[in-house]
Amino acid sequence: MKTNLALAAILAAGLAVSGCSKKAPKVLPPDPGGSVSTETPGANQGPVPGSQADFAATMMGQDTILFDTDKYNIDSADQTALAAQAQWLAKYPAKRITLEGHCDERGTREYNLALGERRANAAKNYLVTLGVDAARITTVSYGKERPAALGSDEDSWAKNRRAVTVTLD
Image 1 (cartoon, rainbow, N blue to C red):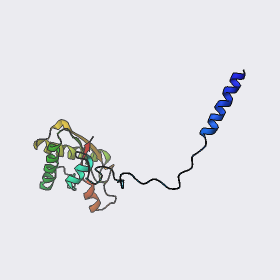
Image 2 (tube, rainbow, N blue to C red):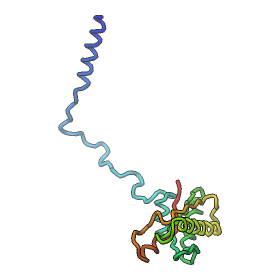
Image 3 (cartoon, rainbow, N blue to C red):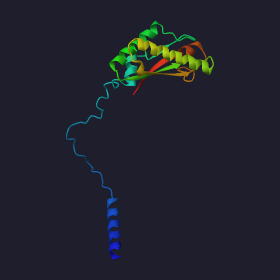
Image 4 (tube, rainbow, N blue to C red):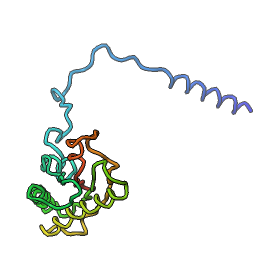
């Protein structure tokens, strides 16, 4: 019993001493290696190659193609954007993408989901003709559920009739 009491007293003293904090020195020693950089290595070198940020920076707005009302055909401007995407994808052959089909707010939900799917598939099919493996491309339609521009005017509608390419990690 005395040993238990003595052990408890030793533990209490140890806890009391460990709870004391040291005072900070008034003067810090000089830095042995000169100034230390706070920058992360590679922080100013741009986006990581092959990342979504790299894709967006390389595409400079060509990650999105636009469509006319109720259309899903690939025009010459779309061909140029998709060709740039195919070149980027050729540089990163293990990278996969999702093509998102979108519509403006007009029309029923069902109609817009079907139209968005046709737009995403049209972009996919064009990329396949440029040599991108179809197995690397998935498609999804959001219909009118994810507008890029809010508003009920022609400018907003034009921005929402689109297919967007998103890279997958």
